[in-house]
Image (cartoon, rainbow, N blue to C red; front, side, top):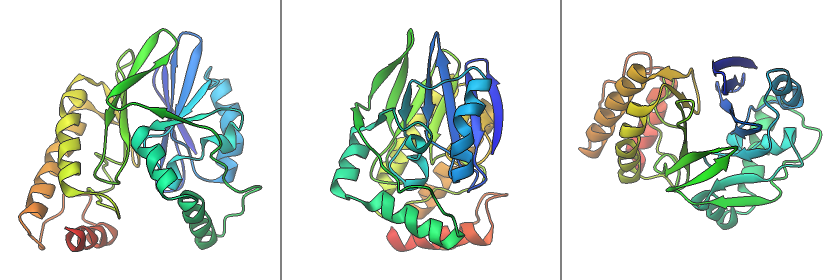
Length: 257
């Protein structure tokens, strides 16, 4: 697990699993953890790491309901988990899916956990909308397409935009089961003005970006989705994201579209 301060009020915690990012945000005397690292050892160490940096979360929030983003309560079992209304609905529509997928991935990686994942109390948040953190409001916008649910979170007071699984330097756009190409394109359109206003853009996986890098990725991803919408099976993937695994994801995208 790697911890990088991107602002005095924001710290990015990167898991060894898929470079999954969590972000601790602070305003005044309150702090919030967005998403989560993956491995049990990372989750066990998380409270101490954040406390040492001056971030002791009062709340948890997840960008979407994929199993690798909702593990915050394993580190902070006394806190409720906030999610977009679409994510809460997804979890209710697919009871036990996140837990089952976590067990399957853990079995594949030989990971043992001290206890099963318990999501506990879920707080449904409006997107578009906002949620309070100290004396500021975090801006919430729908971010659907990768999955049928999700939201971006913009901490305008420190210029940090948390995206969930969009605009990654290590992944092409991934339309997973239940996702949608038109919804993904609509999400990228909504993200444009937010990226323009941000100083640091944190994707769900891979390194955080500055504004210019994020805008370049936004353009590359929009061009890729436009080609997919035209039915192009043979697409030159962006440099650095043209690995065998990303080719597999493209084939999956093409089969779904």
